[in-house]
Length: 286
Ligand SMILES: [Fe+2]
Ligand SMILES: [Fe+2]
Image (tube, rainbow, N blue to C red; front, side, top):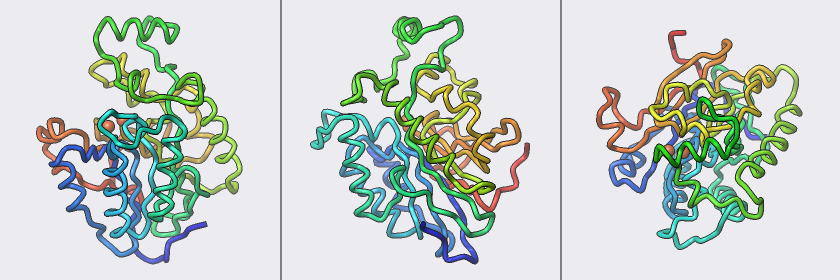
């Protein structure tokens, strides 16, 4: 298991770097740790282009003591502009292998233990995907939900670009990932808290504020709704919604750490690209 050198250091987090935008690439170029022992958790959506993903992770890995990555939906897109045309599981495994070359931890590695301030905690990058179980109000099946989304015009590009091969559907890929991840989390030592790093929130509540509620179908799965209690979650780190904020659910801190698109962050009062401190805990209001 990987562990910190001890002493100082912070567990920091960010997501949704979307470095295809030059303004966002510049944010990564400027990103630096505050101490030599800082770790950085990257909760997906670095880019949809493999060369860009590797550039960002390599840049960050050269500066932070340890970088931990979980894939977002954009990394898993097979975008026509990317020379790497791999699909589904093969694309994910290719990214994992590139991360190994860079010393970046992925959901396929043993969970590292953060032993710096606020530790020890297991740092668990997760790849769970979604299964369309966060349905819009009034809908009871995926088919009804998708029909409604097509009516409103709010349909995630995953429908056209995120291929589940060799799984027949994204939801079957999700269920396989959930089953395997549940087994691994259950095998952690009793009493060791966990910081899960997943592109999507483990519980549905953060999607309650979505402007278009039907988009929640592409934002997680009900299968993980009790994981924050079952697995002693210290703080749940996620992104994807592009709504950076802290929420508390049944006593557990959920931290949305996204940067988002320039058109989104330009309107905010906080400077863009700020790394969110996960441990030691920030003074956040419940
Ligand atoms: Fe994103
Ligand atoms: Fe995303």
